[in-house]
Image (cartoon, rainbow, N blue to C red; front, side):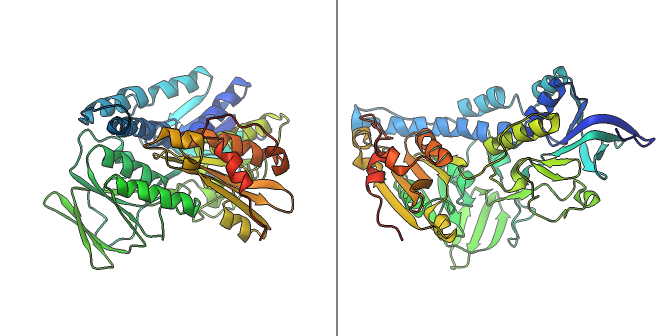
Length: 466
């Protein structure tokens, strides 16, 4: 056991950054009998419960209910739909975020035996952390086991002329609004931008979605991107891809967005949802021989990043998802406490964009598999070709796509798009994770009439390898 320096307190573990994964890790370590100090400069729980997963899914649930009500005329009669943002804003504030107050989460940590500080934690050498408290004072800790970093990310800032200093929204602002604008420009067609754009469009806001890349949801399969764009346009949204934004202005309560094409867009509000910036620039990485300007920290299969240092979450570059952070935190906790367990594997990471239809994927896309040098076979089928998709009617668009490593005869990736796509992907995630032979998948009985039955059709569509 190392001796603490005269100005420091010796503990077993210090956790810097309390996203969902690290919060669980700190609690588990304390319950295992370790002396644990945890530090976060913002809200315990991180982005997910206050600005990301939880409030955004409440927004999507509300928006989906409006869309479903509007489909009644095609299915069952007539209804009048009058959107109101007030119930949703109240639900987000009271049920999801407790008014953006983390006291309940802090109480949970302290009840488990964790010493918690709201403050800025910075590495100061292997196993050493200095905490700057809100009053300007500091406390230093020497951690016998080491330090866990889970700093997370923040909304990216774009170097667009005129943007800085304007009252644009990020996702953090969007989930806190209490009244709606008449019009909105969304910059960024990734998962956050797509979800938010559809929410506001369905609540009656005139939305224009801008994407610099050739298509929205660029990391997903192009077939899914195309279907989602068609759905957005059919709902009245303007979608512009391959755009260059040359400048942004704000005057008289409105935004002006100039494009390289010469078009100028006007809107009451602007939502910037174009990527995330890792919070690695102010955590003292240089004191442990790591690069503070890096976008990711390399970790091994036990989440170790150096002497007495474990890193989990978005900044590891293994997937910016809450479920990845929680998975990694469980592995790191086992390593810290000397427990056995499987090492980290990332060949079957699932994800879901909760638009309507949902866009879920696991493992590699077709292009990623080809780029990896695999001999690939691809099968696909529209959801409407299945009995459930046809029966569902309005709102039933989607597809299943499977990507096979032809040499091994197993799936290495898949996409499930449609109603409950995030649930259907679970079937395919098991197949990819466990490397179930495609020949075995073809012998299964697929329940009728279900959305997942389209998987059988997609498997039957597997083409010759190329």
